[in-house]
Image (cartoon, rainbow, N blue to C red; front, side, top):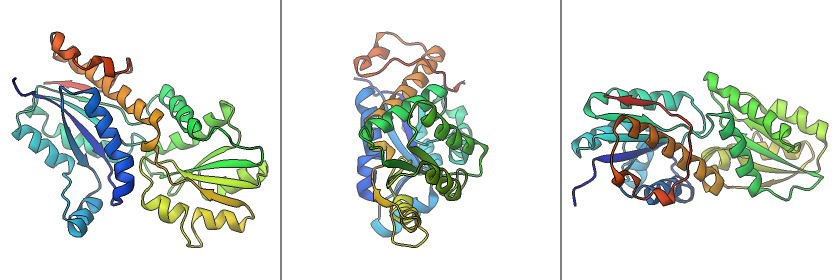
Length: 292
């Protein structure tokens, strides 16, 4: 059987915490591998700091996007889908595209799947996926989600999503960020107005890594848990990344499917292209495709 020339590159920010990686990034990659058995699956991370830490501490080498692209070229890959596990279309996603498109001449075609939050349909699907994990919020409880935040203009999605939670009827759910807006101060004002007795804190990030362990649930006086406890709330922390939510992983699969559909418009194939189709979900959202 001739070796496939098609590949899916799954691009993540990365994490140095093995347990959360196994539950999140590894699971996303495994779901994609099972749904697309005719594609070779490659991994790349965008955080050079985490890549260097893993190599130094554990002697584990994870390729950068540029390194993964060179490996695929060496392996003879001609048709490429790039699926990020990024939450938003921010800085990391922009840099990823630059790295891939810098070698676009080496491929017949390249298609990019979308990050998690790209369309309004995505936003609502993510909200429902999150609330499947928290179906029993009590009247005296509130769920507070910690996003990362960025200086990139895409950061506006966090405030929009916070509003959408409430617009869909989840009035006791709040979404803030570590590094941007909505900030901790804005969260405090909104939560005081609601007046819950107990807060459940959970990371709104693909992995429950450093930010979840230190900035959200840590012992430091500046952690979200400590700050909310000083406000007089009972606080519980849910250490579960978005990549552990089945509904979130299904969204990534739909984004891969959309990218594949665009790829097939450029490189139409026969019945072999439908192999594994029964494991995939139909999805019509467009993603960027570059015929070469």
